[in-house]
Image (cartoon, rainbow, N blue to C red):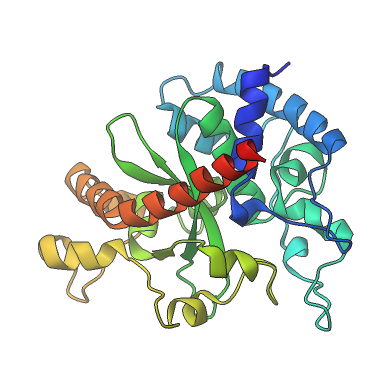
Amino acid sequence: MLTIEQREIVKSTLSHPAFAFTNSNGEPFYTDDRLEILYSALEIMLSKIDTLHLDKPIPERIETIIAEGVPEMPCQFSSYYSSGIDENTKVFPDDRLPGRTAYGLLCTDDGSNCIGFAETCCLLLNLRGYQATPIISKLLKGNQTACHYVTGVVDNNGNVRIIDPERKRSCSEPEKQWSLTAYQANIRYTIPDEDFCREKIGPNGLGPSFIEFTSREGKSFVCPMDYIRSNYPQILDENGRIDLRSGSITPEIQIVLEEAIATSVAPVYEQSLAMNMQQVAVRRSA
């Protein structure tokens, strides 16, 4: 069983506004009963972290375990949860809310979308002593404007890195065989601020359009490729790009990509983490 301290970490993690979903009656998704079920699932996942992929640092280990799934919890991705909004009320049917949570990913057979993956990563990383927080990104697909949730965490070397088991699984598909780090260096990131969190249901289930949201006055995004173009243009090809294929990423390029991600995403990470800390303080004082 999770200890009292561990249960408090779970509740603190779930207090981030990006993870706050309510049903059609305005009631929080996480009831006491659902929390108890989630605690049991997290206990199983923690045991996997202590026994699987021990050659990897814990953040990468957690990413790999969720990407691969385990017999008890296959960690399925489901796009079903990104559809079905009631355009009149801008509210999803209550039966689709689990797919936006770690509960949906770990405790149901249906799985979840990227929000559930990010919530699960944040929970497990925080339970293992890290400081993890959700970050919003935009995938590379030109016609994909939906926001994609990822997890930001500071690793053992003090560098911010992005954890994204759902995209890790996608990049490793036989027809791609892409470097996850190269992919992450190519995409854009923004903070799930108060405005974003108020709109996070949105017409696609993940929040407002990334492009529309970051074009608003006072909003912005960061992209590690901007850092690379300014500091390491020599690693780019004749088209100013980086080949995403894993086989083209040398150890030297890997170091540059990790540096670009850590430097570029650090401010977004810090802001998202501060939002969580603020909500934790409010909850504890209530």
